[in-house]
Amino acid sequence: MRVLVVGGAGYIGSHTVYELIKDHQEVIILDNLSSGYMELVHPEAKFYKGDIRNKEDIASVFKQEKIDVVMHFAAKIVVPESVKEPLEYYHNNVEGVRTLLEVMNEYNVKKLVFSSTAAVYGEASGVCKETDITMPINPYGETKLATEKMIQWVANAHGFNYVIFRYFNVAGADQSLKIGLMKDQLTHLIPVAIQGIIGLRDHLTIYGNDYPTKDGTCIRDYIHVSDLAYAHVLGARYLNGGGKSEIMNLGSNSGYTVLEVAQAVNEIAPLKYIIGPRRDGDPAELIASNDKARNILKWIPKYTLKDIVLSDYNYRKKISNR
Ligand SMILES: NC(=O)c1ccc[n+]([C@@H]2O[C@H](COP(=O)([O-])OP(=O)(O)OC[C@H]3O[C@@H](n4cnc5c(N)ncnc54)[C@H](O)[C@@H]3O)[C@@H](O)[C@H]2O)c1
Image (tube, rainbow, N blue to C red; front, side):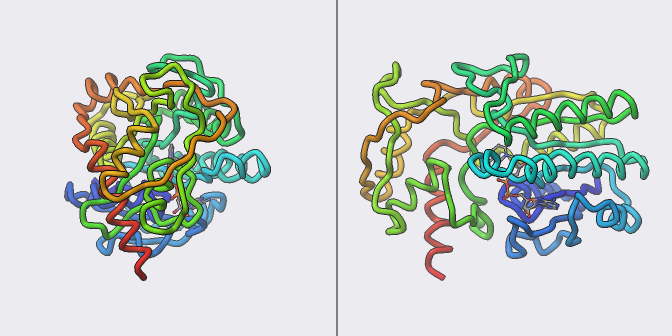
């Protein structure tokens, strides 16, 4: 397969490229490097610098490359920024995909793997199924849901097939430690907690310990980025083999409390944490049902919470030492 990975210089895109190349697929990357890094680009992938809001940038890739499947990761993903700059988010996340779909249609490439998010479920709680109500509570989630719907309408009109993946909490780094989450401004629990044990942060704040869970802290579903990336390989193979359009959650079907995550990090090195007030809109428990991905793609996540935490620690230590 020849796979075009749009956003392949970013965190999840780069891990997916590594998994595709391990799977002996040919990879072409298109990325504007707005939040991606050349050092995350696999040396065996062909790289084009360009922006998916610019039709010419996309068309120039399709003119030069024969492509079987497109994967899209090229989104802006910072929730508070999306609240401040909604137009920027709609422009990048929705208009970017609209332009991409237009060019794909013109070049008769009609298979798309799209990265969406649990944020489309909004304030859901408990175990989330793909059929649950979608009601985002911020512009980031809205742009992802709007794009999902656009893809569905376009598929209907122009005979596209798609796999839309809704991710839960993604963390960790590739075993090679050549790639990982590079960003300086981290907000996700695991990398933030790791910063607390490598001297980049004084402590971890846990938001609320009076939820109705076993230790009072929120339960979330964590998935290793390499497991997530491998699901995309299976998704591309599925579409290339004639699979029909599907929306699938990617999570682990189980959850850990924030305190359990903090304890897993504390096993590597002492972590100081404080209990802060609850944050608005945080449900007590949010877990993905991953039955669809397991059944349709035969996807089985193989990494544990310990693996996730350790790989992020090793990568963060590596990049903080330079
Ligand atoms: N990171 C998470 O925890 C998470 C959770 C749920 C869903 N997602 C989804 O996964 C996808 C990838 O997220 P990530 O964490 O790897 O983000 P990232 O910022 O690391 O990667 C995004 C990549 O896309 C590129 N890009 C952005 N806009 C572009 C444009 N207009 N044209 C060309 N390239 C562009 C960036 O330069 C970057 O390399 C996103 O679609 C996001 O919504 C991520």
